[in-house]
Length: 383
Image (cartoon, rainbow, N blue to C red; front, side):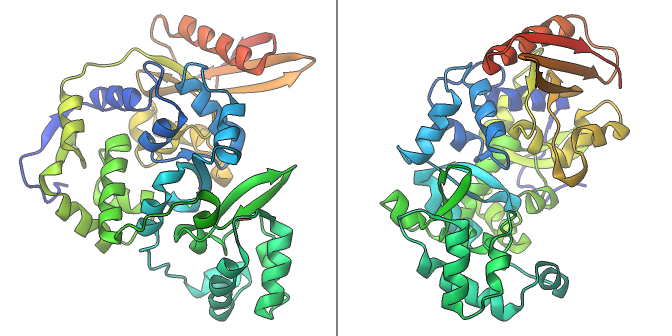
């Protein structure tokens, strides 16, 4: 279906789109400008599992940025911040960008059907109390989830809410995170902590919501486009009317891309880059929950050889597999297990591989062995 475009659609192939996406994700050559610019380009580093975020950064930096560097940026330098953002999942964001994200995500209307309240065991009145009290309790001093749950429930006069706040999924806390009223502090051992971002991060320059949404749309389309309005709505969870207004307001900064019948927006600069690039031959082993794969979930049928293989990549309970990439296409999955002081890494291709891919994948496997500082036992298998 054609989009409501200002100019005729620019045509491209999926090979070109994926080649440019690989470059934008620093998967064709290492990024050298640090973790904060990297997080900005990726619109946040998916961090539902912290070790996966650290692995994604290490890979894109060519091994220059280690997990300890990411943790230092979060806990000591405070140049990164961990919070719930897109689709209500955890991301690492540049700290200085959080006001923009809060202004954009805070524009959501947060519609909640009765089933949502029943599932989470709260009422509309409970949520109103939580959204009032949680920001009052948080400060620049990190507190544990247990401390937050106990204090908020007591102050709200609703002791049963303590159990709701102890939930690891944090569903009842996500509206406050979206508005920039809550973020994660440094862990206390194995225990998570929470802070008030304005006090934890220091200077906070408010951003006008419409401008924030436009900035967010521009960045997402640059990193993950082409997206149509449906894809963009599902990806951001922002209100459709708000996104429509942002797209209209961006005008000629956006271009419509016709990618083998798929119509979506990208930035005009990205459209020019896509049409001037050839297919990639880059081979990568991406760890689980890698931003490249998470960003492609709405287009997964374009990236795997057959529809039935999508379930091997996007599995039950939201689990995203480690994958083997060839030129941006997902051509297999892989697993790893540390056992007996060695790294057992198994690659499962989806079918016949292009010449040279196997050797390149084995080089990638050796890099992951070095990352784990563990000798490698590599196995190839079939689905």
